[in-house]
Image 1 (tube, one colour):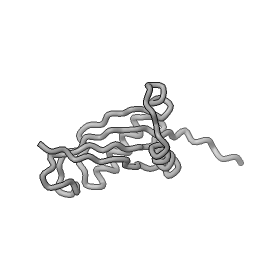
Image 2 (tube, rainbow, N blue to C red):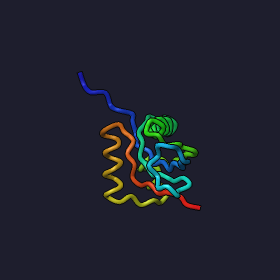
Image 3 (tube, one colour):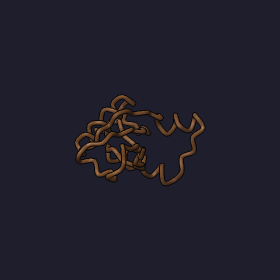
Image 4 (cartoon, rainbow, N blue to C red):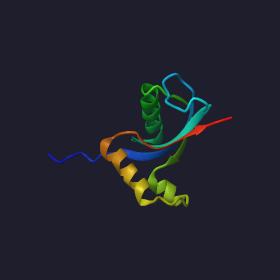
Length: 107
């Protein structure tokens, strides 16, 4: 019996987050943004998974912008360096959401 080929892909997402009591953002931050990699059979599933994980972690996701798969990003002219590719590969291998960067917002 051969192993079934996975249809999972990794997607780059930018998630805007608001404040919540458990968010671990700096006290004076008004919110923030997170660049992350999430897996799914399509981008909608990757977004749903990422939002569910962030809510479980006590964050308050407000908006998600999808940038597509690595192939789609490269077709749009994005350069993907080795460190970013490694995080993407990890998300795909672990079928997980991997946060690449978190930036707090201040007034």
